[in-house]
Amino acid sequence: MNASIPLSDLVSTASPPLNWESGTSRIPFAVYNDPALHARELQRFFYEQHWCYVGLEAEIPNPGDYKRTEIGERSVILVRALDGAIHVVENACAHRGVAFCRARSGNAQAFVCPYHQWNYALDGRLRGVPMRHGVKRDGVAQGGMPVDFNLADHGLTRLKVATRGGVVFASFDHDIEPFEDFLGPDILRYFDRLFDGRRLTILGYNRQRIPGNWKLMQENIKDPYHPGLLHTWFVTFGLWRADNESRLVMDRHHRHAAMISTRGNAGKVSEVSQVSSFKQTMRLHDPRFLDIVPEPWWNGPTAVMTTLFPSVILQQQVNSVSTRQIVPDDHGHFDFVWTHFGFEDDTPEMTERRLRQANLFGPAGFVSADDGEVIEFSQQTFEAKRGHRTVAELGGRDVGNTDHMVTETLIRGMYRYWRAVIER
Amino acid sequence: MSALGFDDWYALTQLYADYASAVDSGDWDLWPEFFTDDCVYRLQPRENFERGLPLATLRFESKGMLKDRVYGIRETLFHDPYYQRHIVGTPVIRKLDGDRIHAEANYAVIRTKLSALSTVFNAGRTLDEIVRTPAGFKFASRLVIYDSEMIPNSIIYPI
Ligand code: FES
Ligand SMILES: [Fe+2]
Image 1 (cartoon, each protein chain N blue to C red):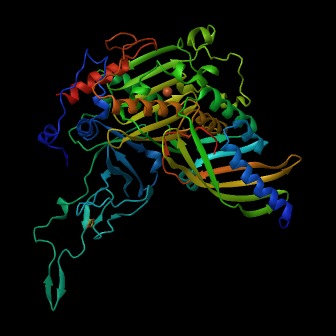
Image 2 (image 1 turned 45 degrees about the vertical axis):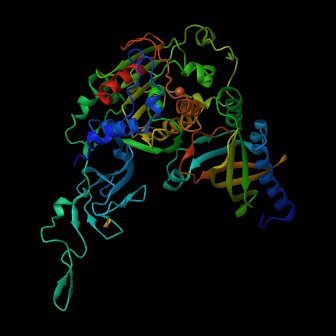
Image 3 (image 1 turned 90 degrees about the vertical axis):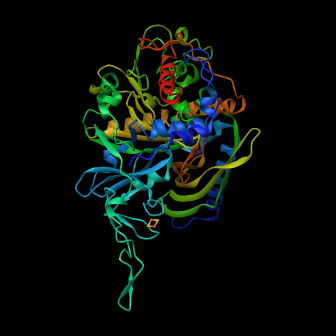
């Protein structure tokens, strides 16, 4: 079940030890540019010991509904079986490996591989193979599978599945800790705030391919230093202020984090942002972009960005809510898949509002398009200037929760965890 | 209208050609002027469109929103500068409905970043509703439905 790569295979291609100058406040470029380290990350973060995001239950509401997605670089299928149970199976035929599921989503009674018609139940069990008992000629069976061929030994790889609040996570590693323990109580609280049991409605998808290492997107959402500086749209229209009431919270491993902020009104924005180009007088031609209506479930915070390591970011930015899935493809690229959703009790006006505020986010978003751009430019340097390192020392060199945003502690925390797992 | 006369057909093809020329010109202020005040503009993945999912990559409901986008492009959206070049097919008229023309056209956009090769950036079709105004034909609705499964990093300029 657990298809782990023997350590010897990794060691044979291992790179020289990384040069961490001090703790994790200076991150070697090699963590972003080394194919051997990337292979190790896939194994240890995506294929072992980590629950990875695969989708929302609302994407597969009916028996037989399925959705194809990825964990790390492996193709998997999220499917609701005919009895209603949710399964995740690898999209790889047990016979000759064909990634047989080509549609992105659909409804099926069974999975049939086109190559030799092996037939699988939706939970991955192999139901039958053609010519198993050979083909009769003149009363004699010719060929066929060996007599000891056992269907039960040749199912699809089945993943362990966890669902909570309508969100589905899966793991190739069946020895993994429970999902709730994986998140830890402090992060689980923010997970449950967003996914509080209400049925979700799918609004749609955005997909972008970003030419940068996958960890840079985790770091981007663990970095409250940049929004008021890079995203001048945020500042111009008063959505982001560095002095907003805010907190940064990590799990005990420092791998996950929640960035929690509440919009305030005190002081002149320009004093806080220190952005000289700031235009206090700028007004939107159409203010509906910022038609923000507080919702009861917020319980205060206007924005909570939760990074679940390694595979997903959960977004609440005022009325816009989405999951952002990270799908690595080699060390220098990843696909970023946005699923915007709403809740079953949304009024039509609230749905419109969520769709309208989605203009701020995504691959063309007023405050998201620029994140992809800077990630690309970082990666360009990581590829070219080997042996150098970044500096992530805002707020000091150590790791800990804070009640302000003026720190890169979440990035240092993530690399503390990274070192514990990758350098062991 | 029961059939489009030559003058209207000429004006319509000019509208499509002008639009392409404008959005490739770098003078972003030209773009909102192709639309009516209460226009609909959507840049939407084909996936969402065909599955009836309402989310769009950009979803604007007025000329004012287009002007706000122009402000964002020019003043707030940090991005790698690029040239874009629209290749737009001849519009096909789907329906004439009073003074409203329903038409669609295929398009491809080629992106050229500085010091880089030209690549196909985005491809799809536009589903359009064009109305006659005192200032000539304008788009009352333009749905830009793109086939491209992956946006190469980001889309900044108008398509
Ligand atoms: S490869 Fe799938 S049935 Fe042969
Ligand atoms: Fe950002």
